[in-house]
Image 1 (spheres, rainbow, N blue to C red):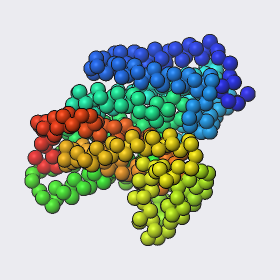
Image 2 (tube, rainbow, N blue to C red):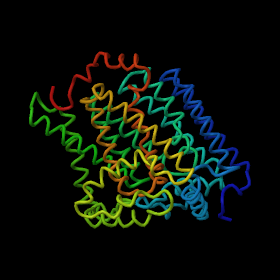
Image 3 (tube, rainbow, N blue to C red):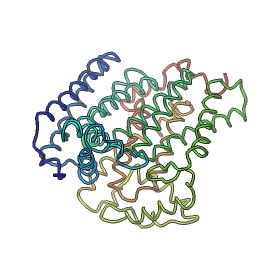
Image 4 (cartoon, rainbow, N blue to C red):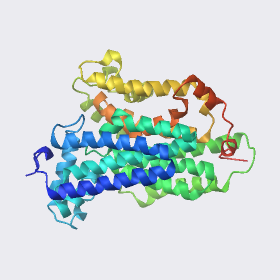
Length: 432
């Protein structure tokens, strides 16, 4: 009754709901994408087609890469919970657990029957929205021409296709982080506090789907602190009202979390008021427990205590983002992980090689701090390449957005270097 969705008979309800979701996705592609730029419609369509093909094959024929285990559990749990009946799913909602996605699917299942293809297509639709907002973000960071190029990269990026085609929570989390970063960039450039508030809400939603999202907010706090410290050391003008309000809002949110929400737990991290040495030790024990199989990290990266944690931390962050390395290949399947890692290595190399193009711009500093914060928490929560392959897909869109302007021909990179700096780039976040 609750088994693998491949064995579930295809029903009229499943066809109807799936068609409605695809219709909504096509409407988004042609109307919303075309409104941004007609050149964006084609990469959105190609991205949609790739995700439809893989998700449909995953539903009817063969489980896609990483489409088993957790993906099957989330979908099956949704059907189990759906037995509570339409409108009776409140008892299963727990924002501190890992099954919010099952609750969302379950709401649909409870009212229209088990429709796994529709559940897949929800993630497909979110994957297309991610492509769209990659283009929007890159348009703000670079320019329109580079935004279309970035959309093509996001549309065809292998892990973004995979995790937008199976019933996992990655596209929900990735979209929340991407929207948060996009609105923060708007806040930096336009100085409107409403964008900062929207970004905090987006990060909060991402945190509900995976507790590591709270570290994106900590990255924002680190950014605000460093900018304020820089202004304090070299005052060149008045701090903008928007910056003061944003800082106050962020600090107030942290105080509120510690004072008013002492019993709230963030999944994977525990009680937000008790994160400390004990929490880190628990994460380490859990990491060691998951260091098994052919995809495990090298032994020198696990079981660290004391001073060992200091040098292990950057190495684990590197292994999360760029592993496995050639010397870690122990099975043919690891080659796919190596190929995926090469994409990230190429983008990281280009960002370093052409750092003069973006270094010093507050938007990029902010994105970098958020990326480092996420790499820190997921670096310590991961001890095998298979899990790392999945976790780094959560923020692949941010990597693409940062590197988009330096991907391409030498002539185009020289053009980027020679771009006239827009007015908002000449205006620092703190001071005139």
